[in-house]
Image (cartoon, rainbow, N blue to C red; front, side, top):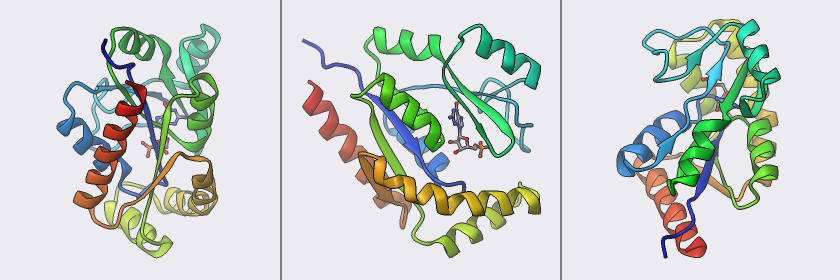
Length: 190
Ligand code: 5GP
């Protein structure tokens, strides 16, 4: 019998390095289905529609909420973000493990719907390090940086509700820790 597919949710404050860790995880596990979210946030330089996100207007987003197209959605720093329901359910039904990168509100909603979902919280080594990383990225306005930093403290408290907390002190080490979590969780589901 094949093992039950795993639903993995990764969260962490902006600048925790969760995006890079998810990219590396997907390279290690090419069969992992990655759900591309829908957002009303404008694209950052280099981001592509349908690759990083599906970029839509607020009107379009609200229509999608009404039409029941989201597994979960949340407003994060003035913008809407949502997970298309069909991609996730189709992937799980076809036996594929699924990776979602969500804020803490989204992770909570998913855990309610899928109690077996594995919630992983990525922590930066310190708040100082976080500030330095967000500023260095250079893609956000000062106002956006300020908002992201003030939410970070709150988000770090939320780590207690996650199944695992991984400190992103060194990328390779953190990636190995996530790989080990996935292996262990697959085993316990199988
Ligand atoms: P960013 O604007 O930096 O790409 O993402 C901002 C926050 O929104 C991050 O914490 C990211 O994980 C979260 N996020 C991205 N997509 C979704 C989604 O579909 N649903 C929820 N709830 N959060 C999301």
